[in-house]
Amino acid sequence: MQGRVSSLFFFLLPELLRSKYSSLQITNVVPVFEPRSWAAAQRYCRQDYTDLASLLNTSQYSKVDPYEGWIGFFMTSSEEWKWSVDSDDLPASDVDWCLFKNLLTWEVDDCSQQHPFLCEDDRLILVQEATSWEEALRYCRALQAVGPTRARTTSAYDLVSLPDPINILLNVDAATQEVWVGLRFLADEWMWLSGDPVTIPDLPDCPDQNQRCGALDPNNSEWKTLDCSERRSFICSTYTKHSERKEF
Image (cartoon, rainbow, N blue to C red; front, side, top):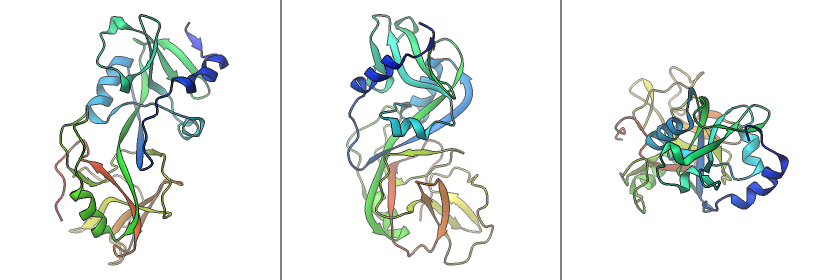
């Protein structure tokens, strides 16, 4: 069974895809380049994000074309294909084959092999209403989560922090070209609301007074520094994975 996934497999694959996205829910896919087994990759993604990535349609496949790795599709010992996000923790003996995205092909491989992998975080909410950065911050912090997620139990929301070097946002159809994120210049430095270090290249070291709030153009993966009073759509998320959030 190891080798390239047949065209018939991917003809049938959409029938297996779960329908889980509301009109405002979006997903961030994060490539992780350190090779791990499928089970170890699943544990990593569930700890820091939501789960291994679940790619739902061909437009999403194209967005991850430059990257390779495990995704959350696997075959059980009873020869049933499942998505990781829809499955409880399974012993390794119950996971026989796993789906791996190569740069040019999709392959089924022994799950004990080590590959890079793609995590997803689906706890992001796109708010279409255009507001200032501060209004967006207040809106997000007033939200209440419906219930706990696998990756964390807190119900607090904030403007989203995206500290990973690569973030692939799916299902984003914003009313404005840029969207506010939790990036702000304060006390002579750029900071994420999550407290994570900012590693975005080419941010100005000393931006003008009217260019001190961070936004993202999700269609072109471009970071922008804007006047905080400008009005944009924005993205909220539950607390990000590392540090305590910054208070404003």
